[in-house]
Image 1 (tube, rainbow, N blue to C red):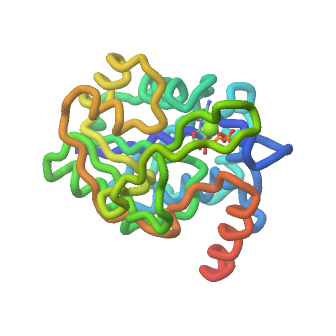
Image 2 (image 1 turned 135 degrees about the vertical axis):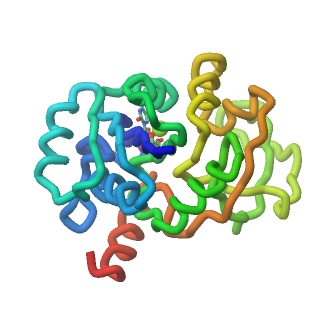
Length: 235
Ligand code: CTP
Ligand code: MG
């Protein structure tokens, strides 16, 4: 069965600060989205990449893909995205042709994920898991807080979950196609990743080891780190 990757790239990148939509910003001279597309196409298993572009930027994204060298054996489709990540992924899934039974969902904002991580996710889906997430143990201790009692007042700590049982989740997340489609048709509350929708269906979600270089470019310091990683790779 073939594998397709949906890349939500329609976000503004508010936390990165003013500028072009985040996925279109350059990392060492190449748009972040192109790095992310190459990261998916680097897997021999991935034969289709669906890019979910900023709503008004689909034409620009198409020419951007045409202007960069991408593997010949991979097909590319561009669709306009929506107001939330969840909507954007759904719009990408709507464009998925028949014949792709394993689907990856990968943030354009994680441009540097290594191919071994991508392949580990695909392998776990092919071995029968309906949903697979790459994840890492946490470096920081995490506190649950309650809302501050007055504006500007410090937030009270409610609990400290046992860090050893927590994982920071990355992408690509991998799915059996029918499961992911059903999750997006059924779950209507807001979520921050696709696997949590499958959890809400009561289905099994499993974790495989993530990778430090699969970090999400979110704030300005992440751009510095991403460019340093690329320089080390000589890209
Ligand atoms: N995304 C999307 N459509 C949206 C919002 C987000 O496709 N309406 C995508 C982003 O382009 C990104 C991924 O979802 O690749 C992860 O989201 P995030 O890191 O939060 O990116 P942004 O939403 O762009 O950033 P911010 O939240 O800082 O605005
Ligand atoms: Mg966001």
